[in-house]
Length: 477
Image (cartoon, rainbow, N blue to C red):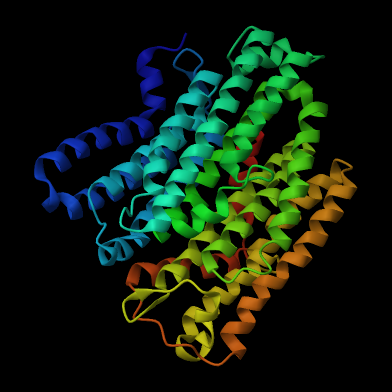
């Protein structure tokens, strides 16, 4: 058994966030309204501190807390991505929250709680820790989705997410109980040992229910039904948080569960992954074509990109996992950059969300139009931008695993999906200008600039990125 002191040392990022949240709750409750600004600044500092601990902390692998959690390169990489998503979403959203009158001290605390849940979820090494992390994350997200209480769309989004989320959590818990009952353990390592050579029918049924709950969190078809409405209805900073940090945690735990707990049941779970991957790519590509709301379009885009990422997981190999991790890292940067533009869509102090409001942006805000165009090209997978390499990694892994049909479907749906990304570029550069956007905050400009530079120049020197990502994938095998 690992000594408690070692376990605590490996869980230092989670401890930083947990103690910080407790302190901020007390501080906010005592100070009231005057604490709103300081709480946000402290929350940003806590997220930055946790990220710094991950980057500079332990580099070896260790199973801690009596097998409940694991600290490995894969977990550290995915937790770093989740923290970056949370940190940037919180910084980008401050101007929006202040203008909407909802810059309350509870908002950054809820973001911290959700992020803490993500970190526990990513590090989970048994079914109980996984469920605790998932629920800690989900409960905070339900409140965040409905945080703008005066807005009817936000209230509807929160209610829909809560009802469907509770259903998916129940199905996941039922699946976990079946797996425990038929394998005799909640530990991923013991489940892998119990299913070595042959997975019983009960375990397979449990795995199906477990995947249902995880697919809901990833926004994978056919459990995507909440995504377009919640993305559109929730406050835009919350939507950015859902699309970035939350997606990282959901994909990370899905990869860990399947690779660590069911390595010999690949024939069973690969069928599930291929099925939801194809459906997600198809729906994400075709359903977004007729969308006029840019947040709703990003919801269908997110569904499609989860499908592309799962192509790598379907391969079930180390190269496939590398593809998934690389895809999610690149997707995170592209999404944060895109939401920087969406948050900057404000005319005379009023937020606008129609794609038509981007008309003629190249004439009124040429720098923003160029950055957004590069991100759209990257999301479409146009070479030599970063998004092209993301798809290259997962499709190559699928081909190496002889999943030729899946790779071909992925390429075809990617070509279809390119239409609605290129349509946005056409609207920005060739349509008559709509009313010009208000002055953009420095934070949004910085996020857009960094994201654009990343997608433009990753191909120039990809070695550090590839090395870190490959190391993370290697630690799972």
